Length: 169
Image 1 (cartoon, rainbow, N blue to C red):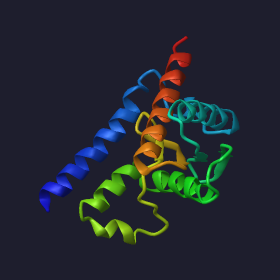
Image 2: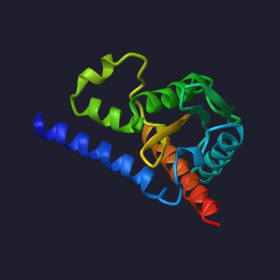
Image 3: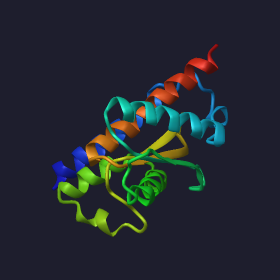
Image 4: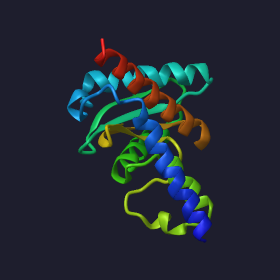
């Protein structure tokens, strides 16, 4: 049991470090606000990556308060993915970790995760962190959990790298 917990903890820490490692050029979370402009940029990036992966997804962006800022559903995405994308974004924000980490913990036998209030432990939610400060989250739904998780992480990582490059210009 200790080894499972240790792996889950290491995985969660690594995921957060990956998300924040590219942000050393941003001075503080004030340098990046999750507003309509940034959320639309995130959605455009997610759609680009989804098309390249031959996936159709629903994409939700929430701000640091858990408020839905922007949402889009690609044509042909199942209707059930609308609510799932929003819940994944809110879960990633509420627990400050990728929802894929929670899904992996659940699949490894940490059943307590299934009892967390308002949590959706399914890949596709990813927190947006700036210098260890949570500024929002992205949620994707429409593909398999691993596809959604990969697209969400890639979207946020690419967006943050682009934001860092713009802030140092």
